[in-house]
Each structure stands twice: as C-alpha cells, then as structure tokens.
Amino acid sequence: MSAPDLEMRIGLHFGKFIGGVIATTKINYDIFGVDVTIANQVETAGIPGKIVASDSLRRYLTHHFPGKYRFRWHGTIEILVPIDSKNQDPEYSQGVVPSQLNIYEICMSKIQ
Image 1: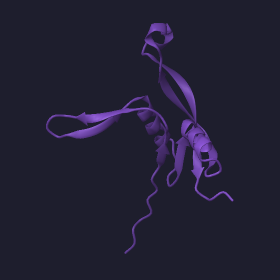
Image 2: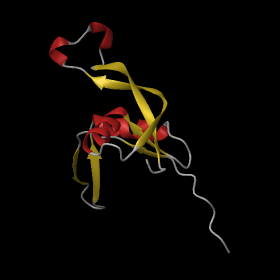
Image 3: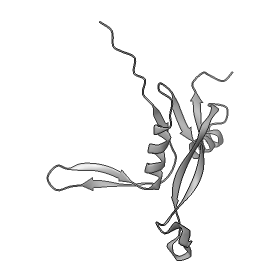
Image 4: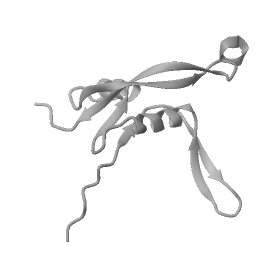
C-alpha cells in the first residue's frame, strides 16, 4: 500500500506578527498581523506541490544566503496595506489601500 502524493501549496513570507494564547476554556495559540494575512494570500496563490515566496522573503534569502536559492517569478497578487489614519485619504475609508506584491516559486534544484 502506498501513500498518495501530497500536492500541498506552501507560501512563505518574511515579516512581523504578534502571537499569543487566546480563549478561556479551549486554549489556543494564534498569530495576528498584516504579514500573517500576506503569508496566507501568498499560500493561496501558490502552486500545488511547490513552494512560493513573497518578494520580502526572496530579498532576505538572497541577501543573507547568496547563491543558495533560485527563484522564478510566479505572479502578482493584490494585498491590502494599512495606512496611517492621521493621513487617511477619504477614498480609503476602511484604513487600507490596495497594493501589488510579486511572488516567486523557490526552485529546489541546487545551484552549481
């Protein structure tokens, strides 16, 4: 008997978040923040069986581990970025502004 292939989408992002224990009866640990939402959107736009990364993670890996990873542009997703409420444009009354984010497939073959 063999196990079926898992065609999971994996999306990675580099950013800030806050986490903590929530609830009073069934204790859970959860994370919150704009970057958590972005990571979720990167995963949603991913490729089954592949790993995709946001541009911020691509830049981090390229800077700190030069030559270790190869990236192939996968596409662009639209994200909502919070804006400073003091300088809020009336057009964006929800406190967010749409923005574009490039995502990349991480190529797993070794670089020679």
